[in-house]
Amino acid sequence: MKDQHTDLPSDNQLPAELEQRLAETPSDERIAIQKTWDLAILSQYADEDAVPDMGALWQNLAPNLDKELPKIKSDRAPRSRGRDGARRWRSVKIFAALATALVLVGSWFWLAVPQTFTAAHGEQLVVTLPDGSNVELNSGSRLEYRRPLLGWNRAVKLEGEAFFDVVKDTRQFEVTTFNASVSVLGTTFNVRAWEAESNPETAVVLVTGVVQLASFLAPDQGVTLKPGEMSRLSQGATRPSMPEAVNNPVIVWREGGLVFDELALVDILKSLERQYGVQVTTDAAPGVGIMTVFLESKPPIETVLDLICASMTCQIEFGSNGYRITLPENHNQ
Amino acid sequence: MTQSSAHQNALPAEAQFSNWCTQLIASDKGAFEKLFGAMSKPLYLYALRLTRVQPLAEDIVQEVFLRIWQRRTTLDPNRSLRALLYVSVRNLALSHERTQVNRQTLLAGMDQQMSTPSPEEAAWAKMLGNHIKEWINELPARRREAFQLSRFDGLGYGEIADIMGLSVKTVDNHIWKALQHLKERLAAYDTELLRS
Image 1 (cartoon, chains in turn orange, red):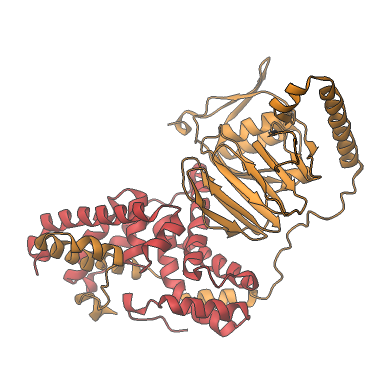
Image 2 (spheres, chains in turn red, blue; image 1 turned 120 degrees about the horizontal axis):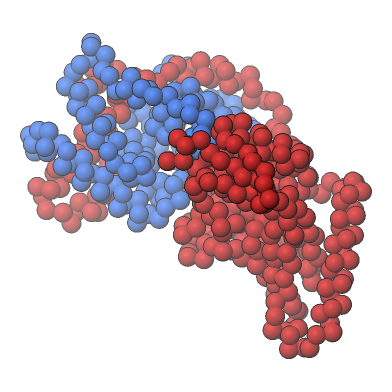
C-alpha cells in the first residue's frame, strides 16, 4: 500500500457532469481543476490507514445472517382488547351524531364546507370514510375531506399523525399533508406530519401494499415504497428520502405505546401534551435535546418526564400551569 | 478475506452491482460475501466521515450488511444497490449522531489522532493528503459529503442526489464549488501543483 502513496492513482476519471462543465472552462482553469480533482484522492489515504480489519467484521457478521428477521407486526391481526372495541364504538357513535347533526344543516353547507375530524388531546379517533376506508387519528391530529357529490374522489387532508387502512379500489386514494402527497390504491400505512415541529417533515411507513410519496414542489419526483419501508420528506425538500427498511415500523401509538423517533425536546413535550391532555412548558430552544424514546405502554406522565429529564439532567416543576421543564444552563446554547 | 490493496481502481463497476443484486435475491451467499469484500471498506470510510467514531462506524457497516441480507428477497433489481448501501449507512449514521447530541459522549480528539501521520509514512503525498483533508473539512457539511461521495466512492451525480435527497443540479453545484475551494487552497500552498 505504501508505494501507492507516492503515485497518483490510475483511476482519476471525472464524472460526466464535471467533464461537461470543464469543456466550457478556459484551459488554465480547466487544468487546475483537473489537478485538484486528481490530488484530492490523497486525502482519502489519511483515513485508509485507520480502516480496521474487515475480515474480522465479516466473521462477526456471518453467523448472524440466517437469524430470523423480526416480524413486522401485522396490522390485520384481530384487535381483541375491549378497550379498543369501546373506543371504536364510541367513535362510531361520535360519527353518527356528527352525521345526524349535519344532515339538518342546509344543503349549501353540505357541499361547501369540508368534513373535519379532530382527535382530542389524550384521545384517539377512528374515522370511517365514504368509501369504507378507516383512518385512526392519533391525539391532536386533524383529518379533512370533501363530502361526496357524485361519487367520492378519495382525497383527504391530514395535519398530524394517522394510520390508514384503505379499501382497494380502481380509483386512487390521496392523502395530502403540509408539504407532500401520498397516493395509494389499497393499502395500510402510517403518515406522520406535524408542521409545527422544529424539523417539520412528512414521514410515511408502509405496512401492506404500495404507496407513492411526492413533494408538492416536484410531484413527478416521488418515491414508491414497499411494505416495511419508510421515507421522509422534509419541509422545502423536493425529493423524499430513498425508501429504507424499518425493522420495526413505528406504529406503536396504535397499540397504546409511546414513541419519539429522534425528536427535539420541545417537540416531544408538545406530543406529550397531545397524548396526555396536559400542559407542559419549557425553556428549551427548538432543536435542542434530540432523543429517541420507545415505550410499549403509556406510563403516567410523571414517569415519562422523569425518564426524559434523567437523560438531560433537567428539572421538573408542577404548578398551576401544568408541568415546567427547565434545562441546565449549559444545555441551551 | 484479504484486504484489497488497490485504492480507487478497486471500486466495482455499476453493472457489477446489478449482478450482485440479482444473485442476492436468489440468496447467493457467495455473492453477498463478495459484495461485503468490495464495499465494507468504502462504506466504513463513509460512516467514519459522518460519525467520526470508529467503533460506531464498524457497527453501522455490520448492521447495514445484515439488513441487506435479511431483506434480500425484497430487493429491487431496478434500483441501485450501491445507492441503497450508501443511503442505509447515511440514515444509521445520522440517527446515531442525532441521538448522541445530548448524551455528550462525543469523542474529542478522535479526528486529531486520525490525521497524525505515522513517522515512517511521512512521504510528500501523505503530508499533502493531510492538508487536503483539512481543506475538505472546511467545506460546509453537505458539500463535503457530496464531494467525497463523488471523488472517493466513485458515485454518479444521480446516485448522490438519491442518497442525499438533493437534485442533481444541487449536487453539481456542490462538487463544482468544492473543487473551486480546494483549487484555491492548493494554489496558495504550492502553485506548481496545479500546472500540467
